[in-house]
Image (cartoon, rainbow, N blue to C red; front, side, top):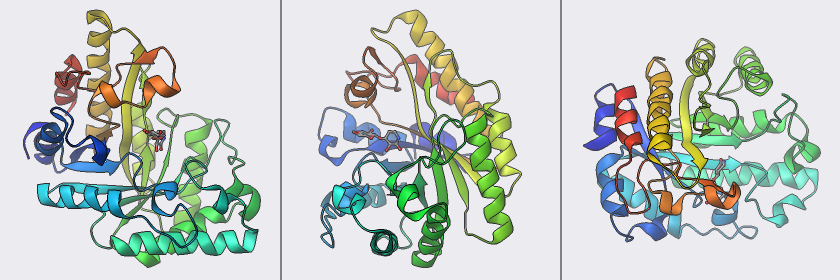
Length: 311
Ligand code: XIL
């Protein structure tokens, strides 16, 4: 691969992006996708509401498009995500505990079996913790209790033994109560023989606030015997951007990539989109944006050179 992915490949890692197949034909989207990245994650197309909107009825079209393009381009795929409280249909949320446990296992099995051997990493469970380190009181947690995470990982291992199984979360980039809760869960899983291979750090960051202990945090997980990855990197600012903010963002992209590259078991960095034009940030954080590496006109921002400098 050329571009960012090519730089990563030379040290056996990846730089990925989140993709939406409905954008393939917009401007330079497809060209940048194919030439700059050696990994892709479905931004939405592999979430529960996209794949199984009603019980037993699967929609594979968009996910299949992503797989086909990635395979034609020689990119690895990160699967995102099997068990999450968000973007999960109400028919799932309304099930009884007994049915919910079975449907969770069925969903994991069906989705992972379809893409067996073709998806290198799966985010099996997403965002299961609160910032204070307690379990998020999602419908999963409320109905199934603590055991649902281990059950999900066991089902995932059985469905595709070749996939690396990740737990993924946000605001876990620093050493804090939330990342320590995941650290303790991974340690416990290792002791108990629950299958887990990796921890994903979303890294939805703000300029000037890249945690100073990011590398150290990644390293402590690696020292437990799991892989780590930065899975959803974006670094937002108050919009509009200006030269100074873009320079800060460049340094922050460099710091983030360098934190991963300093850790042998850090497999790569996925940026949560290609262009600021389609980033999720302005929708969810009003007044903020410009968080990605290409601007709304598909021009490379200073952050591009920052990313390269961090590798
Ligand atoms: C976001 C997508 O980018 C949006 O398009 C969608 O509307 C909402 O979800 N954490 C995650 C991602 O794990 O799946 C989220 O993606 C961003 C936060």
